[in-house]
Each structure stands twice: as C-alpha cells, then as structure tokens.
Image (tube, rainbow, N blue to C red; front, side):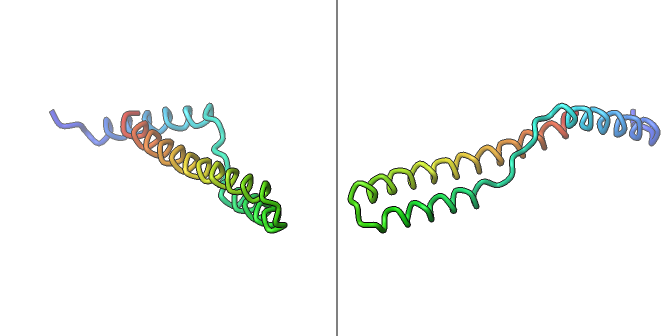
Length: 91
C-alpha cells in the first residue's frame, strides 16, 4: 500500500525531530588539529637544527607520533561522518 503525502511528511518530520534531538546531546566535534600538529613539527625542526644528536633523534620520534595522531584524527572524523550518515538513514 503506497504511502500518502501526509504520511511521508509525518515520517520526515519525525525523522528530523529524532536527528535534531540527538544533535542536542552530541559532544562537540573538535576543530582540525593539523595546523597545531604542523606548528609543533616546525618547533621540533628548530630544536633539531641546533645540532644536538639527542635533539635530532627525539624530534624524529615525536614527529612520527604526531603523524600517527594526525592520521588517527582523520580516521575518527571519517568514522563520525559515516555513522552520522547511517543514523540519518535509520532515524
């Protein structure tokens, strides 16, 4: 049995209310962290350029960790977007 326009409108309104209600309780999405990561990496480069072998090694180690954080943040954003879209479909 096909839905009438009134039933479709009611379902759409109910869906919108569910989505808006869920948004109110959702945690804030942090801003992009890449600029901060880039800034810290620039500071590390300045420290490493002093010529101290320990500083060079430590800067390399920290740079690798920051790249891991950058990739993880991107994956979290992608996952969040995926699940938000799935929620909108299901609501």
